[in-house]
Amino acid sequence: RVYTFTKGSPDTLVLNASFDGGRQINAVSWNKAVDSNGELVIGAQTGTDRARVFRHNPGAGTLTPIDGDGGTAVNAVNWHIDGRCIAAGLQNNSEGSGGELRIYGFVDEILDLEDDNEIGQDVLTVRWSPNGRLLAMGDNNLGGAIPSVQLYHLDSKVIDTSRVTFDNVNIICNGNVTFNAPAIVFTGESSIDGKDHLISFSPTFSIEIASNSSLLLKDMTLSGLSGKNLSLVDSTSTITFQNVEILLNDTYTMDKGHFEVIQSMYILGGGTFVYQSSESSIITSRVPAPPISLNGLDECQPGSYGHLIIKNGSTFNYDVISSFTLLQLEGGMASFKLDSGNLQITESLELTKGAFMVQGRSTISAGNSISFGDGIPANNCNIRIGSQLEVTGNLINNNV
Image: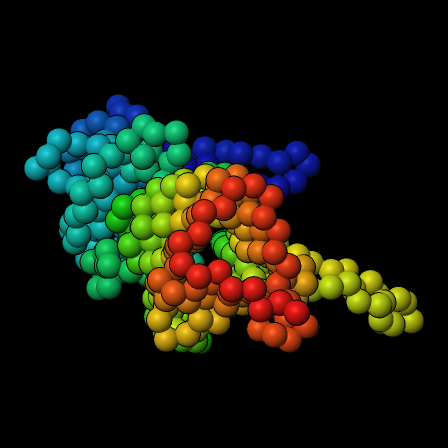
């Protein structure tokens, strides 16, 4: 059914056209292209043409069937901005019966299947980006507690399942989110704000931070890191962790670029974070400063802390041979802490400024040494060992 809506006193909703197909309609999308002839596409629950295009004539009050396709229930449809392409999301069907995410071409009143992707679960929603270059798809994650969303790039009516690129994008997650394939490449200055939710990487998903680009991960519990599925392409790439807990049950390696810690970064779960980059990574902090005058008012400059905390059997592996100073504590309020955690050092590591703290039963294993301070008083590293620490290798105190 198509209704006309007139705003007034009172508002009115009047039936303009209808078509009785004798079946449940799950989704409707209009063709909004400038050269549209009033077409709309529906997704139906039953029938042999469950993705069906109609032409609407508002003057005559008619809906005329044009063309259709598909023998599996269609949950969602969305018409592309150019009017020549339709995305459809289907119910999970049997192997060999076609995929659950389909792209149809619509030219000369003919609906043609252009691309067919096997998802293996119900596709509940599909939506084109405003510029038509990206397609978002939501599924029921095989009935799991956390639905998943996937993003695709469209190339000549074919879905590119390899990767999408986000430039200067801020993502806000208002619930638990699982990222699936394809990979996301971040360029410019971007962020993902978890809003204190669980953010998971599926086994097929990865993030790449491009040259001269940065990504802020903020206020989240992060799960699914392994291998190099959060990668930095070169020395100019930066990842910042702000109030992030990493549930690490595998080995994750960072071999390029650098990371920064703002406020807190926890590594727990029993896995290993391997640092192999030739760039300096920083645990940041700032001491409080006197107020400054701004528009006639005193503006406070509060301090901030930075903590990198290795917990519950997890390991931070400083796997760098060329330099022993690439893990830096910025200022007196920054700290590196082992809380029943492990620090592995392939060769040597020097910590200056800030604090090194130990809780629980923790270990340090160094191929050569771990040292604190460098003989300059301003660079002293405060050592606080509050429980049991087992050290293999040389422990050198250069504090003065």
